Amino acid sequence: MNYTQRPKSRRTAGYKAPKTEKPAPKGETKTDAGEKDEKPARKKQNIFMKLRTAIFPVKGDSVTESVRKIVFDIAVVALVITGGSLLADVFDRWYQVNIVDAKVEEAYDPEVETIEGVVNLSDEKKEEILNEKPSILPSFMELYAQNSDIVGWISVGEADDYVINLPVMQSEDNDYYLTRNFERKETKSGAVFADFRNSFENGRLSANTVLYGHNIWDQNLGGSGMFAKLTRYYDATINGDYDNRLDFYKENPTVTFNTLYEKSEWKVFACVLFNTQEEYGEVYPYTQVHDFDTKEAFNSYVLDIMDRSVLWTDVDLTYGDEILTLSTCYYPFGKKVDTRCAVFARKVRDGESAEVDVSKAQINKNSLKFTYQANVEGGEWKGRTWDTSKLLSY
Image 1 (cartoon, rainbow, N blue to C red):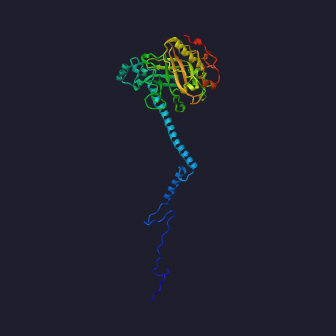
Image 2: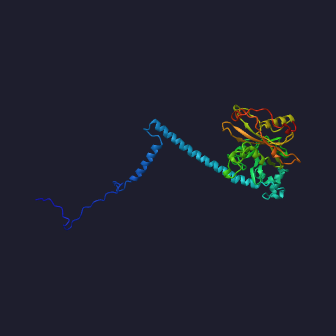
Image 3: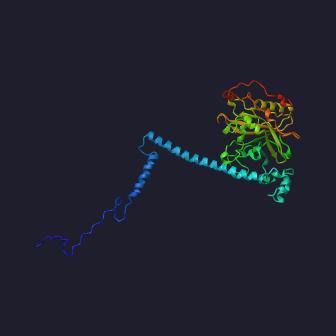
């Protein structure tokens, strides 16, 4: 007879409780292999999928939603690209000001008068340079050894507070130094350079030497800003440093432009805003004139410049004088109107004092303007009203 076996009582000897498994911790499950299935990993993947779905167009999105996501994605990419470009520009300018410009300036000492004073070149290198440039000033020898494209040094302001203080380069065209520095390295700052058509050989300058430089404001970097501060001869109220252009001119009535062969001072006599686009009015070719074949050609050029100048000074001119033209880009009407600010100076004559009576300088309220400029600023030209007796050869 078979009887059903009754379960043993816990009080019964030999009783063993059946084995039970502890419940898996929350978020984990057992697999056939006894390994844990990591649900948090799936949660991370879900977060990623949600983020991707929120940012990128997916199947099921409406047209409006897809467009919104595309616009957002493009904006993010643009921000990354432009942000990186901005940082690159800042670093490029910092390097130019604090490394390149500082090193070049240290290599140029206008007070060095003898070859013995050039201490950073070997005798062999000095002899080599003198064979190439017999009349070179000792102060330029070290810079010439570093880059033979150098033709001079331009300074505006006092030695302890230069407005501009930079080397002047020259190449076979007017493009090379637009984007290269003294070390011939690529940089948006470029370098100050002379028009390739100008002459510097054997100490003879063209009748009109034209120098170009970018307009870059970088006071926070402690730099000269290339030719940016030239624009203060036109509008000196920039950054609130001056009340008007006359104040700036009175502090800076002369320019120092030393070439490889000669030291010289130049007296500022005019400042003009030029237009470069025919649709906005007259395009005056001030950078295309480098020599004057006749007295009439010289007089005509000076008359044209003085008619357009925003300054009248006490500086006189005569046929045979050498002119220095400093040109930089400048956009008082926005970049749609491509304009240039040019400052004109004439070389101090042999035996003449470099002093200028700035008390006689005036603001020209009747300058000849190009069409767009006249429409914006107002004022109709009333004809030549400046003192033409200052043009001695006229």
